[in-house]
Length: 416
Image 1 (cartoon, one colour):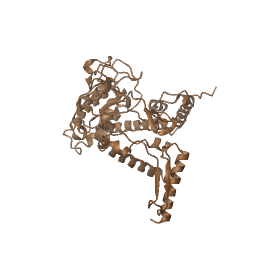
Image 2 (cartoon, rainbow, N blue to C red):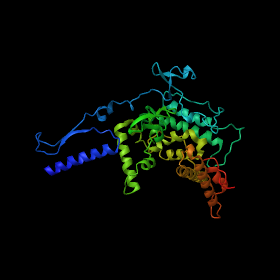
Image 3 (cartoon, rainbow, N blue to C red):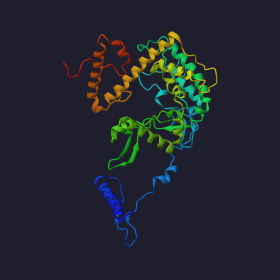
Image 4 (cartoon, rainbow, N blue to C red):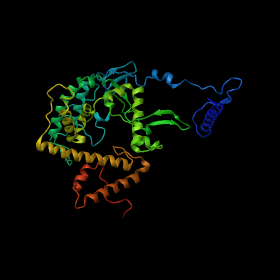
């Protein structure tokens, strides 16, 4: 390398470092001395910096325990002396902690509009000793959502389905889940894994003077120990990533591809347990995600998953015969229509979540309450006006049925 090149390299290094030290709070060791003349007394160019405290992260990463916590049951962690849980539901880990009832929302009546009933099944909150037991817990949860025959319930959505269907199809799904639980693709990727359920930017705290230093993680209350494959759909939040780190890109598609590849590479290197489950065919996993939600999502979602899985049953090499016989003729056509309405409702909800800057369950920041309420009303009124046109194929009742949040008032707050 020529003398000129050496000077350029050293100058660039020192200029860049000085700029970072002057304009950012990134911890960079101070330069004590430097020389860019390769003919100096040392015989080469050099930079002497102050001692850097700590050790390289690369030297200790493999010893970190974040992905090495091993459990032998599915449920949630509790203090061993927690008195509100019966001793028969506690499985001790050590003198301080035990595994007991799963604390996730799916297994509990956490909201006033999500009541649970016991006429078809007792609530199953775990803990579960193996995958077959965990699968039974999912189906029992679906049955506890169903209202008894003498209880009135709104059934406005065309894809909701009759209560009888919500009993029949989960019963078939139970048989299929027991078959899947024995399949190596599922069973080998079912290690009890504890994951934070809601690790977004609002739940990660950093030092205000050094954003690279994480000071706290919050909202651990829903943390549970579940089969590793339950996290196979964990993907990079591209919208949030690009909102905070937009950068310069040739196209949105190229940017997404780069981010996805980087994310996949990092997961493979640092979280191999999750990398393995991400390779499982999604058609083998979706039944686990939706079987307990039929009364929430509508029966058409579970039916569609059963149809897809039964269609690929032999291709997957699953033991014949498949417990589910898909519909045909008019029944299949009716299902396709209902499923299309469900997809429209899902698209509407995703659009509103993005437009209103809220979450899927409707949470908004208190300081944005008035603004969001007004935007919510405006969005509803805009769609109401659109479907009032003669060429619209949707009625007002159908719009109200698929509206994902509480129906807003039809007048603006600033109007008399």
